[in-house]
Structure formats: structure tokens, C-alpha cells
Length: 153
Image 1 (cartoon, rainbow, N blue to C red):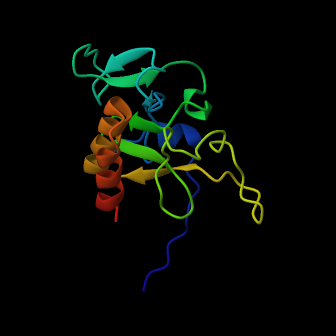
Image 2 (cartoon, rainbow, N blue to C red):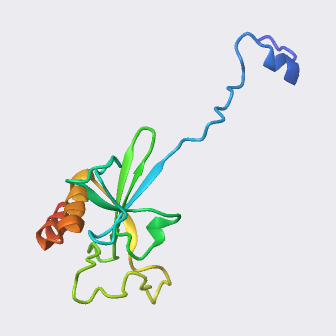
Image 3 (tube, rainbow, N blue to C red):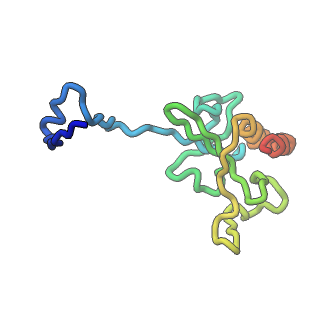
């Protein structure tokens, strides 16, 4: 085996190499759009699940900075460059948030006593479950909420 002496490559030589040794980083950060959905009647605009304006068959959307932290925010969509992710407010027991329930008044900001975290957190779900839940938020029909909970397992 022949031993060769290793030489140090200077920064200038590395930049001028025929095949660059370092890849240039793309300075553009990936952009993602977040759509936050609420109950019909508390909305700012009606849109479809991709964010396009749809006044006839749209779903209730709210705007604003940190809209997903508002008490009226129940579901959200994060539309990235390649994928779309769907989230619904869910408690630790697997139940989706029901804003028209009998005992749901002021529980949206409830905390777990033994952990100190929020009781209701956003959980990622698939598209089918998300569409059931949006139908519930739009129509206030509990059958859609139950279908969403059944489909999530």
C-alpha cells in the first residue's frame, strides 16, 4: 500500500473546483400557509379546505395573527410546498372539541392538573377525518362529529 501525503485544500481552491465540494444552500425558506377554521357564525370568510374563496359551499375561516391560539379556533390546515397537514383540537382521551356541547363552555383553555399542559391540543389527522369535522363546524350536525371521531381510529 502506497502512502500519500495529505494536503490541505484552501477555501479559494474549494470554491474554484470543477465539481464543487460544497453545495450552495438555497436562501429561500419554504413557505407554508396556515388556515384556521371555526364554527359557522363566528367566521371572517367562507373558503374551501385549500383556502380558495367559496361563498356558497365554503367552510368558516378566521384570520389574524396567532389565529390558531384563539378560543374560537377548532381546526387548522398547514399547506406547505409539497404536502398539506390537517389538525383538529383534541383532548387526551381522543375526543374532538365540540363547541356546541352542553359542558363545553370555557373548557377550551382548560389545563391538565397533573402535567400543566393544555387539555385541548391540535392533533394531526387524515383528510377524510378533517372533512367530516369541517362539515360539523359548518352545519352543527353532531353526526359529522361522531363520524370524524370514528374515522380517526
